Image 1: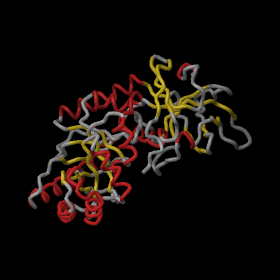
Image 2 (image 1 turned 120 degrees about the vertical axis):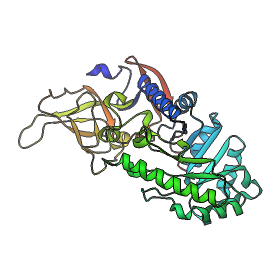
Image 3 (image 1 turned 90 degrees about the vertical axis):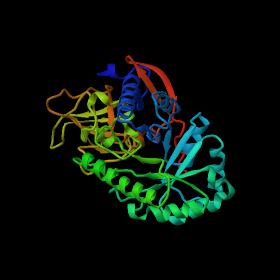
Image 4 (image 1 turned 180 degrees about the vertical axis):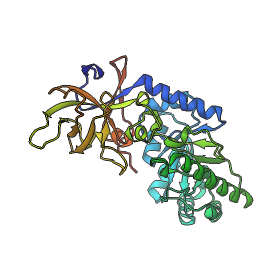
Length: 367
C-alpha cells in the first residue's frame, strides 16, 4: 500500500489530500448558502493560512478562532472579520493586543459573565466600542456559557462597560457522542432562540446568532442561527467517521507512518504491527465510545489499541495479510485539531504526489 504515501514523505508526517479538502469546503459552503446561513469556520482545526484562504474564497464571511494569538496570525494573514469564540478574562496586556487587532479587522469576542464583560470594557477604556461581544449560551454541553435566562444581565453589564453587544453564540459540544448530533442540534436551536428573544425583549439589537459544530453542521433542520462555526469538517477524522458524520471518502487528513515492528499471533500475543506514529503526532484523544486511537483507511478492520509517544500498536485482522517491515501506512487521527498543533508543516498532496508544503502558522498560539 506504499502508493498511498508519496516517496518524498519521510514518516511520520501529516498529509492533506487537497482534492478532498476542497470538496469538503465546497460542500458545506453550498449547504449553508442554500439554508440562508453564514459560515464562519473555526480555524483552530487547521491553523493554516492556505486553508483559511480557501474557506474565505468559498464564501465564508469570516473566521472563528480560539485565542488572541490565533486571531493575530490570521489577521496578519489578511483576514478581515474574526470572532474569538470563547469567554476571555482580559488583563492590560490582552487589551493592548485586542486594540491592535481591532485596527486590522472587524473583531468580536465572547463573554459569559457580567464580571468578564465589565473587566473587558474597563481594560479597553475608550476603545471598548471598537470591539463587539457575543454572549455565550450553554445549550447542553455544560462547559462555558450562561443559561438563556441569564443573558440579559451579561448584556447589560457589557453595554454599561461601553461594549457593543452583537448577539449570542453557543457550542453544542455534546453532539460529539454517538446518537447525539440531532438532539444536540435541537438543544442548540432552543437555547439560542430563547437567549435571542430575551435580548430582543430587553431592547438589544440581536445581529448575530451563532452556533454549529461539525457533527451538526450538515443537519438540514430549522434553526434560528444566522451563522455556523464548524471546524473539523475540512478534514474529517476518526471521531467523525465513527459518529457517521463523514465517510471514508471525506477524510482529507492522514498521518503517514512506517511499520517498524510486526508480530504474528503466538504465545498468547495478538497479531499486530507497530508504526512510527505515536501520541506526539496523532494526539492522545480517545472518547470512551471510540474503537481505538485512530483508523487506517486502507484497512478498516485494523484497530490502534495503544499509543506511546512515538509509536502506535495496531492489532491486525486475520482477514488481511500482516504488513511487512518498512511498509508505509496511512492513519486517520481520532481528533485532527490535536494533530495539526503537533507539527510545524504539512504535505499538500494531489494525484499521489506532494504538490506543496504548508506551514501550520498558528501552531502553539495558545494565548
